[in-house]
Length: 135
Figure 1 (spheres, rainbow, N blue to C red):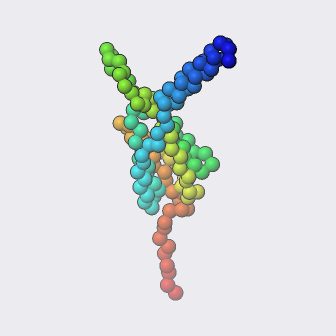
Figure 2 (tube, rainbow, N blue to C red):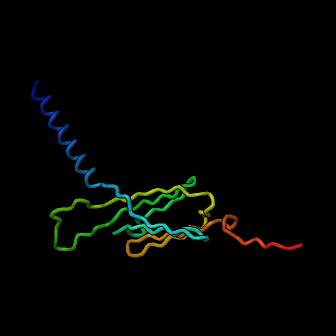
Figure 3 (cartoon, rainbow, N blue to C red):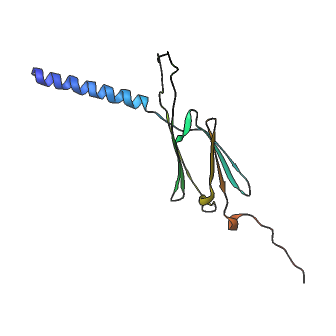
């Protein structure tokens, strides 16, 4: 083994170490959700602490609902981070939606790090009472 080979191996180790550090900083978390269903539709509550509206992406595509977000964890002025296990958490979650839900009428609201999605049922999928006549 010559010196240039040894140097190249050291550089590969440094690159590998930097990639590991970056992957440790970029952690994807599955946000916890609560889902409630009634005859009108479903309401989904997702916990997304530190997420702002600008860093939140909610999409519907091919019958799937996708939630992706990045949290902003500010460092107070005059302080520096001594230890941070997750600096900028990335949240991601996906759900399959039944065709009985009207995805064009989804209502989304983000308040205090909690995302509330209201997904109504299609009118034809809602329960309705059928009048029965006699005679």
